[in-house]
Amino acid sequence: MAKKSKPREVIKLKDVFRYYHLGDETVKAIDGVDITINQGDFVAIVGPSGSGKSTAMNLVGALDLATKGSIYLDKVNIERMDESELAQVRGKKIGFVFQTFNLIPTMTALENVMLPMVFQRIPLQERRERANELLTKIGLGERLDHLPSELSGGERQRVAVARALANNPEVILADEPTGNLDSKRGKEIAEMFVKLSEEGKTVILVTHDPEIAKYADKIYRLKDGKIVNK
Image (tube, rainbow, N blue to C red; front, top):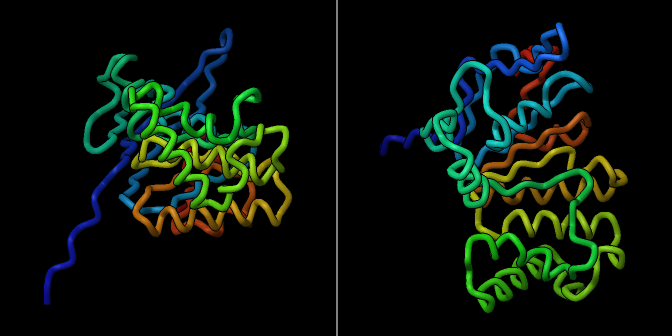
Protein backbone atom coordinates (compact mmCIF):
# COMPACT_ATOMS: atom_id res chain seq x y z
CA MET A 1 0.00 0.00 0.00
CA ALA A 2 1.32 3.43 -0.92
CA LYS A 3 2.26 5.60 2.02
CA LYS A 4 -0.14 8.48 2.52
CA SER A 5 1.64 11.81 2.08
CA LYS A 6 1.83 14.12 5.06
CA PRO A 7 -0.41 17.22 4.78
CA ARG A 8 1.54 20.33 3.80
CA GLU A 9 1.73 22.87 6.59
CA VAL A 10 0.58 26.30 5.44
CA ILE A 11 0.35 28.36 8.65
CA LYS A 12 1.89 27.79 12.05
CA LEU A 13 1.71 29.92 15.18
CA LYS A 14 4.33 28.75 17.68
CA ASP A 15 4.07 29.96 21.29
CA VAL A 16 2.67 33.31 20.11
CA PHE A 17 1.93 36.22 22.42
CA ARG A 18 0.47 39.63 21.48
CA TYR A 19 0.33 42.23 24.21
CA TYR A 20 -0.96 45.81 24.01
CA HIS A 21 -0.12 48.58 26.46
CA LEU A 22 -2.96 50.91 27.47
CA GLY A 23 -1.47 53.41 29.90
CA ASP A 24 -0.16 51.40 32.83
CA GLU A 25 -2.20 48.35 31.85
CA THR A 26 -0.95 45.44 29.73
CA VAL A 27 -3.67 43.71 27.70
CA LYS A 28 -2.81 40.09 26.85
CA ALA A 29 -4.81 39.80 23.61
CA ILE A 30 -3.05 36.56 22.65
CA ASP A 31 -1.39 34.69 25.49
CA GLY A 32 0.71 31.74 24.34
CA VAL A 33 -1.09 30.22 21.33
CA ASP A 34 -0.05 27.27 19.16
CA ILE A 35 -1.98 26.66 15.94
CA THR A 36 -1.06 24.56 12.91
CA ILE A 37 -3.14 24.77 9.71
CA ASN A 38 -2.55 22.54 6.69
CA GLN A 39 -3.40 23.01 3.03
CA GLY A 40 -7.11 22.48 2.39
CA ASP A 41 -8.10 22.82 6.05
CA PHE A 42 -11.28 24.69 6.90
CA VAL A 43 -10.60 26.11 10.35
CA ALA A 44 -12.86 28.22 12.55
CA ILE A 45 -11.51 30.48 15.29
CA VAL A 46 -14.35 31.18 17.71
CA GLY A 47 -14.89 32.97 20.96
CA PRO A 48 -16.82 35.80 22.61
CA SER A 49 -16.03 39.47 22.16
CA GLY A 50 -12.64 40.24 23.72
CA SER A 51 -11.42 36.65 23.50
CA GLY A 52 -8.57 37.51 21.12
CA LYS A 53 -9.98 36.05 17.92
CA SER A 54 -9.62 39.27 15.89
CA THR A 55 -6.04 39.64 17.08
CA ALA A 56 -5.41 36.02 16.07
CA MET A 57 -6.83 36.80 12.61
CA ASN A 58 -4.53 39.82 12.26
CA LEU A 59 -1.52 37.70 13.18
CA VAL A 60 -2.43 34.86 10.82
CA GLY A 61 -3.11 37.36 8.02
CA ALA A 62 0.24 39.16 8.42
CA LEU A 63 -1.63 42.33 9.40
CA ASP A 64 0.14 42.40 12.77
CA LEU A 65 3.29 40.96 14.32
CA ALA A 66 3.65 39.00 17.54
CA THR A 67 5.09 40.47 20.73
CA LYS A 68 6.79 37.11 21.23
CA GLY A 69 6.80 33.80 19.37
CA SER A 70 6.96 32.80 15.71
CA ILE A 71 4.45 32.86 12.85
CA TYR A 72 5.22 30.77 9.78
CA LEU A 73 3.59 31.01 6.36
CA ASP A 74 4.73 28.19 4.08
CA LYS A 75 7.48 27.56 6.68
CA VAL A 76 8.84 31.11 6.32
CA ASN A 77 8.90 33.15 9.53
CA ILE A 78 6.97 36.32 8.67
CA GLU A 79 8.19 37.95 11.89
CA ARG A 80 11.47 38.56 10.09
CA MET A 81 9.91 40.34 7.10
CA ASP A 82 9.74 44.10 6.61
CA GLU A 83 6.46 45.85 5.76
CA SER A 84 6.98 45.76 1.99
CA GLU A 85 7.61 42.01 2.12
CA LEU A 86 4.53 41.52 4.33
CA ALA A 87 2.44 43.51 1.84
CA GLN A 88 3.59 41.20 -0.97
CA VAL A 89 2.69 38.15 1.11
CA ARG A 90 -0.77 39.54 1.84
CA GLY A 91 -1.36 40.43 -1.79
CA LYS A 92 -0.32 37.10 -3.26
CA LYS A 93 -0.95 34.42 -0.66
CA ILE A 94 -3.95 35.64 1.38
CA GLY A 95 -7.45 36.69 0.33
CA PHE A 96 -9.47 38.65 2.89
CA VAL A 97 -13.25 38.65 3.40
CA PHE A 98 -14.75 41.06 5.93
CA GLN A 99 -18.06 41.42 7.74
CA THR A 100 -18.82 44.81 6.15
CA PHE A 101 -17.96 43.64 2.59
CA ASN A 102 -15.67 46.69 2.00
CA LEU A 103 -16.69 46.99 -1.64
CA ILE A 104 -15.96 50.25 -3.48
CA PRO A 105 -19.47 51.78 -3.87
CA THR A 106 -18.72 53.54 -7.17
CA MET A 107 -17.36 50.37 -8.82
CA THR A 108 -19.41 47.58 -10.38
CA ALA A 109 -19.18 44.01 -9.12
CA LEU A 110 -16.80 43.23 -11.99
CA GLU A 111 -14.57 46.24 -11.24
CA ASN A 112 -14.45 45.40 -7.51
CA VAL A 113 -13.19 41.90 -8.29
CA MET A 114 -10.68 43.23 -10.84
CA LEU A 115 -9.18 45.72 -8.35
CA PRO A 116 -6.77 43.45 -6.39
CA MET A 117 -5.23 42.25 -9.65
CA VAL A 118 -4.19 45.82 -10.51
CA PHE A 119 -1.69 45.77 -7.62
CA GLN A 120 -0.19 42.53 -8.96
CA ARG A 121 0.19 44.19 -12.39
CA ILE A 122 -2.01 41.69 -14.20
CA PRO A 123 -2.96 42.89 -17.71
CA LEU A 124 -6.40 44.47 -18.12
CA GLN A 125 -7.89 41.79 -20.37
CA GLU A 126 -6.73 39.02 -18.04
CA ARG A 127 -8.19 40.90 -15.05
CA ARG A 128 -11.52 41.27 -16.79
CA GLU A 129 -11.67 37.61 -17.87
CA ARG A 130 -10.75 36.28 -14.44
CA ALA A 131 -13.23 38.54 -12.62
CA ASN A 132 -15.97 37.49 -15.05
CA GLU A 133 -15.11 33.83 -14.50
CA LEU A 134 -15.12 34.14 -10.69
CA LEU A 135 -18.43 36.01 -10.53
CA THR A 136 -20.06 33.58 -12.95
CA LYS A 137 -18.81 30.64 -10.88
CA ILE A 138 -20.55 31.96 -7.75
CA GLY A 139 -23.81 32.66 -9.56
CA LEU A 140 -23.45 36.38 -10.27
CA GLY A 141 -22.75 36.19 -13.99
CA GLU A 142 -25.81 38.37 -14.69
CA ARG A 143 -24.87 40.97 -12.06
CA LEU A 144 -21.43 41.96 -13.36
CA ASP A 145 -22.35 45.59 -14.10
CA HIS A 146 -24.34 46.19 -10.91
CA LEU A 147 -23.09 48.56 -8.21
CA PRO A 148 -22.96 47.27 -4.60
CA SER A 149 -26.05 49.37 -3.79
CA GLU A 150 -27.97 47.37 -6.42
CA LEU A 151 -27.07 44.02 -4.83
CA SER A 152 -28.49 42.21 -1.79
CA GLY A 153 -26.33 41.62 1.29
CA GLY A 154 -25.71 38.02 0.28
CA GLU A 155 -24.76 39.05 -3.25
CA ARG A 156 -22.37 41.71 -1.93
CA GLN A 157 -20.66 39.15 0.27
CA ARG A 158 -20.32 36.79 -2.68
CA VAL A 159 -18.66 39.61 -4.63
CA ALA A 160 -16.32 40.06 -1.66
CA VAL A 161 -15.47 36.34 -1.76
CA ALA A 162 -14.80 36.55 -5.52
CA ARG A 163 -12.55 39.56 -4.89
CA ALA A 164 -10.65 37.60 -2.24
CA LEU A 165 -10.03 34.88 -4.85
CA ALA A 166 -8.89 37.33 -7.55
CA ASN A 167 -5.15 36.71 -7.17
CA ASN A 168 -5.65 32.96 -6.63
CA PRO A 169 -4.40 33.04 -3.01
CA GLU A 170 -3.62 29.91 -1.08
CA VAL A 171 -5.38 31.11 2.06
CA ILE A 172 -8.84 32.69 2.48
CA LEU A 173 -9.15 34.60 5.74
CA ALA A 174 -12.74 35.53 6.62
CA ASP A 175 -13.51 37.83 9.57
CA GLU A 176 -17.16 37.47 10.69
CA PRO A 177 -18.25 37.13 7.02
CA THR A 178 -21.83 36.23 7.93
CA GLY A 179 -22.26 38.83 10.68
CA ASN A 180 -24.40 41.16 8.55
CA LEU A 181 -26.42 38.40 6.85
CA ASP A 182 -29.59 36.52 7.77
CA SER A 183 -29.29 32.80 8.57
CA LYS A 184 -30.14 31.65 5.04
CA ARG A 185 -27.53 33.90 3.37
CA GLY A 186 -25.02 33.08 6.09
CA LYS A 187 -25.47 29.37 5.34
CA GLU A 188 -24.87 30.02 1.63
CA ILE A 189 -21.57 31.79 2.37
CA ALA A 190 -20.48 29.01 4.76
CA GLU A 191 -21.24 26.43 2.08
CA MET A 192 -19.09 28.42 -0.36
CA PHE A 193 -16.18 28.15 2.06
CA VAL A 194 -16.71 24.38 2.36
CA LYS A 195 -16.49 24.07 -1.41
CA LEU A 196 -13.34 26.22 -1.58
CA SER A 197 -11.73 24.00 1.05
CA GLU A 198 -12.66 20.90 -0.95
CA GLU A 199 -10.98 22.52 -3.98
CA GLY A 200 -7.74 22.85 -2.00
CA LYS A 201 -7.97 26.36 -0.59
CA THR A 202 -7.09 26.84 3.06
CA VAL A 203 -9.98 28.63 4.77
CA ILE A 204 -9.74 30.36 8.15
CA LEU A 205 -13.02 31.66 9.50
CA VAL A 206 -13.24 33.98 12.51
CA THR A 207 -16.74 33.95 13.98
CA HIS A 208 -18.77 34.22 17.16
CA ASP A 209 -21.60 32.17 15.58
CA PRO A 210 -21.47 28.47 16.63
CA GLU A 211 -23.84 27.47 13.82
CA ILE A 212 -21.47 28.85 11.19
CA ALA A 213 -18.41 27.39 12.96
CA LYS A 214 -19.93 23.90 12.59
CA TYR A 215 -19.15 24.00 8.86
CA ALA A 216 -15.41 23.95 9.64
CA ASP A 217 -13.33 20.78 9.89
CA LYS A 218 -11.48 22.04 12.94
CA ILE A 219 -12.44 24.60 15.61
CA TYR A 220 -10.10 26.58 17.85
CA ARG A 221 -11.92 28.15 20.80
CA LEU A 222 -10.32 31.23 22.33
CA LYS A 223 -10.92 32.68 25.79
CA ASP A 224 -8.84 35.46 27.32
CA GLY A 225 -6.23 35.04 24.59
CA LYS A 226 -5.75 31.31 25.14
CA ILE A 227 -6.98 28.23 23.29
CA VAL A 228 -9.30 26.48 25.72
CA ASN A 229 -9.95 23.43 23.56
CA LYS A 230 -9.61 22.26 19.94
